[in-house]
Length: 213
Ligand SMILES: [Ca+2]
Ligand SMILES: [Ca+2]
Image 1 (spheres, protein in one colour):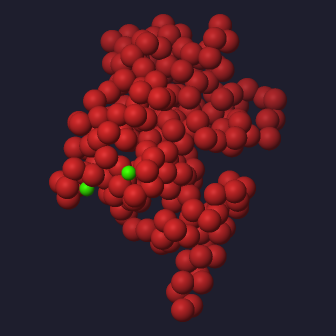
Image 2 (tube, rainbow, N blue to C red):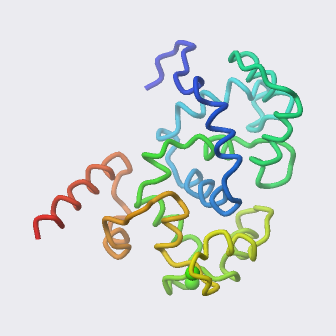
């Protein structure tokens, strides 16, 4: 819940996390943004408050200058050129600004961004024909539909580790930082309507159950 004070615990690591995210692959950035788009406002309230510190004109996006000013206000000594680089690598629509969702997706906590439930939801958005694989065509479609710039072929190469020209769920989840999958995609599909807060708990329960068998 919002406490109303000006303390933002996330701000301590904001620059570190923004920089880390900026070095990720385009495919991961796009996928994370899809995850961010699917979240309820309450799930990212803290990040939105943090974004508001930068978005002084309340336009839903921050310019390079606003980001630089905001980072300085938070106590970071950062060069203008570094801020420009950061914006260029975080900006998925080539608009030279950081949108609220680009900001949120860059700083998504791993409890959300690396949850199998969210990863599976993101995978499903790409796999339109539900054959269990993401093709270049499907990737292209999502990029176009969701307004991202980027090359589908090169994104395919970023995640297609077995070089079969398709991205399966294991490759996808691995790319999103999941080393091992504790539950099968089919199990997750049935849970699409479950409230986000209980997901971690459910995954733990599922793990405990499968180790009982
Ligand atoms: Ca497919
Ligand atoms: Ca593959």
